[in-house]
Image (tube, rainbow, N blue to C red; front, side, top):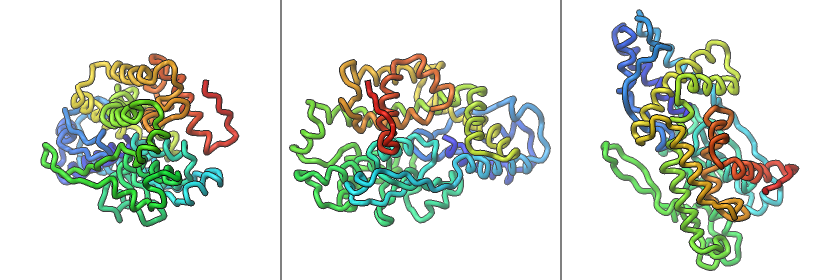
Length: 390
């Protein structure tokens, strides 16, 4: 979310710097024409114009100064939100041994729902990994990659996994490869990756896009599949809801987090607080970032035909998920989470600490499942945690 905003602000800044001095209303008119190339499908949008009293209520002289402000706020300020860091996630030694001691490095934007999905998967399975935060404007940390989105996972420093669903499916297949009857037994992660071929196509806007075949499939044979998916049609169910999480649920996050100017400011206030900003950096990140993301949320609302009150779409989707799990199961996977559980949990968790998350917990039936997921994903990274999943 913040990453998409940062790139947008940077481009707006360059537009302003290259234009003659202008009035505030002309600066505002630039924003709709700036394409937003987000870190995931959820944020590559365009849309209606912007007239915010917060930033554009008075005429401005010296558009270049404001352009610098956009660049500074969007580039330096928001990057500090998810500043470059390397965090070591340690798992128990027996878990590390069970996956052959794979060295995993996750390149991410902290607030990206797709990156959060991958973290949920890795944490639940107790896989040790390092995180590299990517500068959302320059993206110099992944300049070596022809694939320019996140998440990216590097395995042992030489095998690159792209796309959150491919990453999860390939690593799950690798985990299953320790089974005696697994069709991928003794196969390397590079060999497993061939099961998810990359395809390039041109979308309706004439832009080249990348997709991956089989990305929701864990490559197990029939016998292993019966062990992994003991209930009839449980594999189809898992694939259906993993796809639903990517194609629908993720599109509800930004419109809800940045629903009003007040919520947008509160969201960036939270981000700035967590990022430990300096006074000036914090100001630009909070006010410029909040204004831009408020605009983006309206574009998403229009693009995905959401209701005027986008909370209702969020509530409906979350309750639909809870109904699909049913009253007799702790998780969609039964007694343990499956990959659909982890995908939905990862996406929803990016709202934690914000008003949208509080409202969701108050107005839907998701709380019990969410708390069970929270405990399940933390259990491997915090062995001392008492897991009570009732």
